[in-house]
Image (cartoon, rainbow, N blue to C red; front, side, top):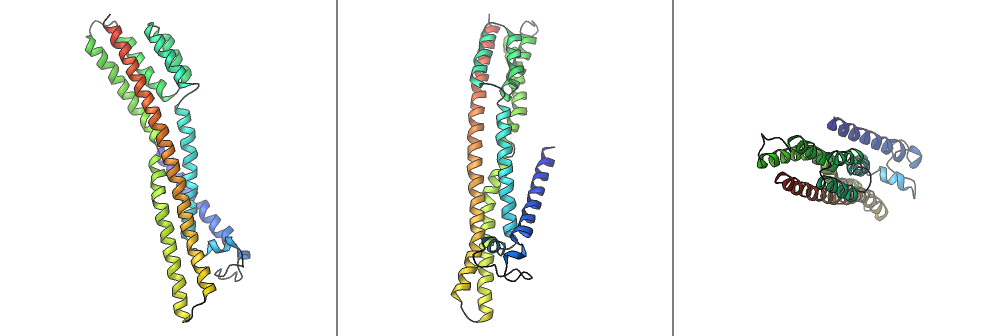
Length: 260
């Protein structure tokens, strides 16, 4: 399902991007030669960007993709944190566990509804089931709790890190596409002068500016991708650290209670 969503987003982004490129940037009204669309009107930046070639459409698509997944990660990570203040929730859960009030701790997890709550709930439910079971030794009880924690963590952690690789990939390839567009633009500009046999400084300046629009687009996409990737990676790392601290806390409480 995740892959289908990603493919759909990328496909729609590219379709929208090329629609913008062809019908907005490529509007005949932006050019002095509407039929060939090779000579933008004086001062018409939109038309000049269009002359950067199809790579402009790709760059627009990459920017739309990175912005889309930036919003997706923002809402998904906030949802994973659950409702209310996570630190306050964790303090209440640990207090309930210290008092042996497992049902109250589970109710806190149900209300919080975040990734941390799902992991702690799995551990609490497992410990509650085997705490007084004489068939389990102390070490085995703790091992069972740890197994429940590991299973829940393996389910929740990928949800936090999902699609970060897309942001990092776009940050890398946006610059490369921008440079490719610039190189192609420069080749076309100088090839045209080679055919005419004369050098027109004005036309050369226009050709270089057209090529550099690709560089600007590639750098913009890369900047947004890098900033988003680093921002969300930091948020995920901080949250995972909190999860580790919470797991350590409840494990210590369970260890003490099994030895009573």
